[in-house]
Image (tube, rainbow, N blue to C red):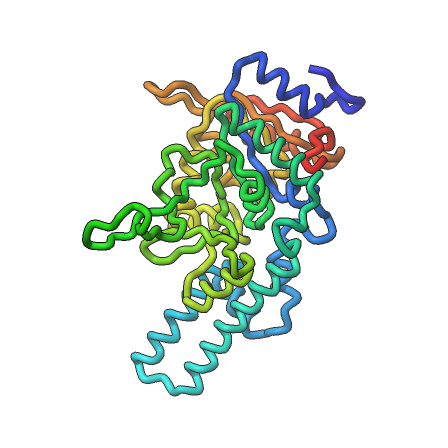
Length: 350
């Protein structure tokens, strides 16, 4: 492969090499994917930083108790605690304080989404939209998978706007049971539930995403409607005590524990832990809290008797000398061959 002045090949040189090797190739996206769209509104740990700016001492103390900025967990615990307190005869003033704190938390989440995202899907300029769709589509049209550790809406927007043929996220509609024969044109369908297409799934949100909700029995994907933007529909679910699924903070062990307690996240993680061929990463820095991702890569790197193969190599995109130095310093953590390429040559957004 051709190399630049730093001795690194370019992104398209990597793809050409893997194509010649006839190697199935997958993509892992990190926060750099969103930063490369707009560094002004996306940043590492943006949601955690937003929480830190909130002027509410009680919320800060609560997040400190659970030791992670996990909205999903804290919202559920506040709602459960309110019901338990009522059963044990707690006074109304105390219960109202809990309810008000829960409402404040929901408001913080909605405000964070507003601040940290473009207004809606069509805010993304057409040139950027098409460039990113082409970048994503290369992998799925060639039999690969997309894995993302981001919980923002950018990838969802790109997939929704472009209707890529093999972009399957596992969600689909089920025919609602009418209890008797109903003509096909009169059938009613459910909201988008996860599971119907999971065997053919190619899009995996490893840390969840803001459009994914745990509705108790089902995992639901929120969508735009002809009446409301996505943000409005997300707020309606929060008001209905349904919680967005996303892993926002914590060390590798804490993140993995969160993943294992949710069947959707656990399924995506297991799929990632069993990929074969090669993995390309873009915008993922393999920081100190990403050991669970490296662990999954190492599981995929182990050959299991009777399987079709294993993960042979990883190609990590780096932006700077500091990135390059960091990846070199952790290469021995990986059980497969580690290569690097110049991430700036990828031109994800055109």
